[in-house]
Image (cartoon, rainbow, N blue to C red; front, side):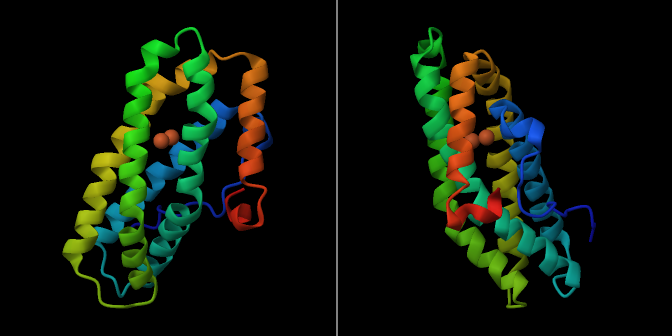
Amino acid sequence: MSTSTSLGGPFRPAQSTATDPVAWLVDCHARIEKVVAGLGALSRAALDDPRAAVTAQACHRYLQLALPLHAQDEDESLVPPLLAAPSGAALGGALDRMQAEHQQIVLALPGALILLDHVVNGLAVGTGELHDLAEWADGLLLPHIHHEEQVILPAVGRLSPDILDQIARQMRARRATPGAAETR
Ligand SMILES: [Fe+2]
Ligand SMILES: [Fe+2]
């Protein structure tokens, strides 16, 4: 299988992105794209290849720790200031779509994590299950982040510097708790 699916270890925003929420969120999206690529590679891989377990572990870590925090960043730190902004009403439908997709994603995570855990531990996994997981990621996660980048993040970038600073502080605080240390 391809070895280009490494997710680069725990997520630590570069100095330049730690104070810029839009750059930080785009960075997270790049990681989500790597997870989708990793799940696609797993669905085609020979699972006795040791690289399959490494890829499954990296995908598991991102989906378990970082993705829920990313969704929380968007739901809790972006939605309120965007709705309060003068153009907020026009964004309402896009924000509803984003939040509804977050709920779909979070609902699917426990099953995905069990499957990936089985790959990590060399337990029997049906190739159909991995194929379905890869299709889910391809069909939901990619359109989701592309929609955010086209519609929502540009609106975030138009918020005032004070509000952007507040969003970045909330994102940093979310990762400052002991349980989230891996995702900093
Ligand atoms: Fe999202
Ligand atoms: Fe996102």
